[in-house]
Amino acid sequence: MRNHARTLTISGSLAAAVALAGLAATPAVAATTLGSGHVDVLDAEWDGADLHLHVHDEENATEYEPADVTLSVPAAARVANPGYGFLGSGSQVWLLPDTEAEADAAGVLFPGISTEHLTTGVFAGNTVTYRLVSATRNGAATEDFSVYEGAGTRWYDSNTATTSYKSKTFGVGTHNHANWAFEEAGTYQLTFRVQGTVGGVTESATATYTVVVSS
Picture 1 (cartoon, one colour):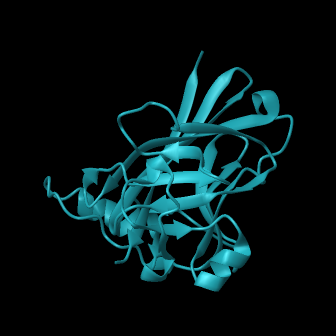
Picture 2: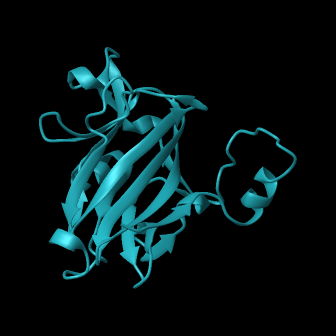
């Protein structure tokens, strides 16, 4: 089986900076910062040859390359820890809620996972899978990120002690929301991959998202 893969990581001036003589630097903050409103953080598109990942700002009907956006989680996102074991033992977590009314009331992002730009009849089983490839906080691997719905049903968990909760399959043409939780303040780099099968060929796209969680 052949595999086609498309990776979105860095672009433009940032790519040039990274290319400089092996310099290790803290990831640059992108020019565009999104900190409130309905934003599909993971938004897959198919152009007939390749999968792509974008950040889709529903408020302004604007799409961004993931490398060109910083997602901001303000101190106002802190809530009492609901007590699910995977959220750690801290008294508070930073939460982007799964309902728009709650997000709007707190003035924080309402993050989505979208396949609504993918049409039926293209991908095998009319599904694609989003995988959490890696997660870091302030440059080090972190266990402090998770996505869950309802009363603690996990979709994703960055805990490296388990291989579970790293991928979830969605039907094409759907729009999905869950709670995005961060257990500590800091700068997160979240790498996701979307993957599906077209005509027996595995197609994928990978992108890294920067999330700044303020204390």
